[in-house]
Image 1 (cartoon, helix red, strand yellow):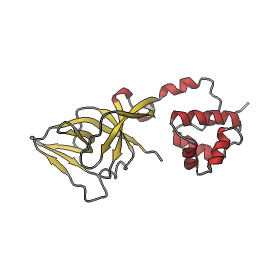
Image 2 (cartoon, rainbow, N blue to C red):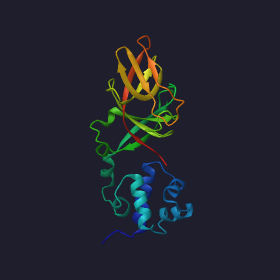
Image 3 (cartoon, helix red, strand yellow):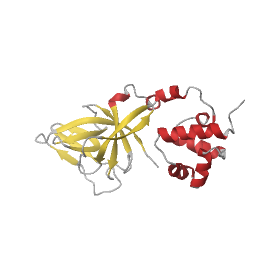
Length: 212
């Protein structure tokens, strides 16, 4: 017998993904554009959502619609594909400004979806600023793979003088390191450093996650 339309199954699955992604009922209400009371009725297995709302939730959680409407007997196995990627302190996307390095939280990451061989080498940094807004919006999470080398034209996390960090398009010309913004705001200018400034690449930008 199909689980489609089963309010109890949907409620269980929805609460599972809400907990996994650390989302509240208010968050779900905003995502699906429904009242808080409607989300509560879903979570309490009083009502079953329309198919368009199920699709919106599936797209948001990056899962199949069946993950929400079908009873999964081996739920713990489906969690294996997710790596709880650490989120480190905010990184300035403007003038270098490195926050204290500490794990703020963790975000579920599907290595297969992102084509990541070693997810343990990755971390998120929360972008603070508008100098990279053509690629990464203020408040978004930049996914970084740890490395000390990037090619010219790639976006990198760079330490300046050992303690300041910035996210910029990186290039090297002879003894000069060029860190270029990618912004709609013309007030952000290219930063050029000579050999008298200590520059160290600590990671390559490989993706992003935007929370809405």
